[in-house]
Image (cartoon, rainbow, N blue to C red; front, side, top):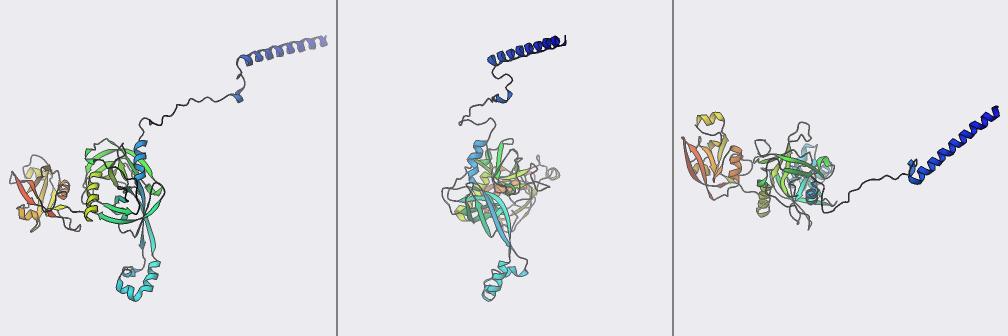
Length: 390
């Protein structure tokens, strides 16, 4: 009895197994990948690339166009712990104590710093910040293609914090200038430089404000403000538009930590070009000067002088025998316009006078004793930077 039961159970099992195998065989015929997880192919949908188009919202074209023209700048300056360092370059002391001074010179410790610059001519002229190269004993630039070259200072303009340096090379990739006067708040810009020495870097932002001044950075301030990240090492680098053209030279940041906080400042390209062209043509920068001390018009002053608007620059003092003195300007006059251009404050006054040509006449509009009058003045040449009065 038991043997017959075992035979029936075994027969049922064999039949069930046979049926299952048959079902699996049928599925494998009509679906070869059924239960074959290891042999399944991964199917990925790939969009065919088009070399003539770019990703929507990408600024890669602008970056590729401008990056070759941006260089890294490395400077070194010797520092001395010995108080006799001031005699190292004195020819008299060199005559009697040459060996000792050479030993002292060899003990100097190099102090290194870094920044960025922008190639502005194929013949090796590079625009950067004055504070990047000021007092440097040696300047070395690294091109985008990896070459490293020594550079010499052609000229500087501390009043705008600009400097022009040169390397001995030809056919360099020079950047294209754009008119910074056409910029608007909200325009997209890219900052290119060498932040913290990590290598060439591109950051993106917008123009946050135009005509920023009263920052205490330079004498002539007319900064572009941007939230494109600018960090130490970016100074002297390029601020470009979405076409890859230069709109500014990155110059300074507002920061409590030393890093970017979204407030960076760039010198407008139009101003930078004017300074550069004067350095190339005459070796320095010549600016107009009339010889006055001025201050901003406050609401209280505007009310006191019965002005309709709080704008202009109050002449607080006139230098004796200066162009302003000879033209009859006096303390208490309010400067409203220069050559038809409105004076909004003392900072804009400085910039408007600076671009005037020395030894040529200009017309100033002033308010005096509640009357508006025009004054003709022969523009003078601004004295050395040590004199900061306008």
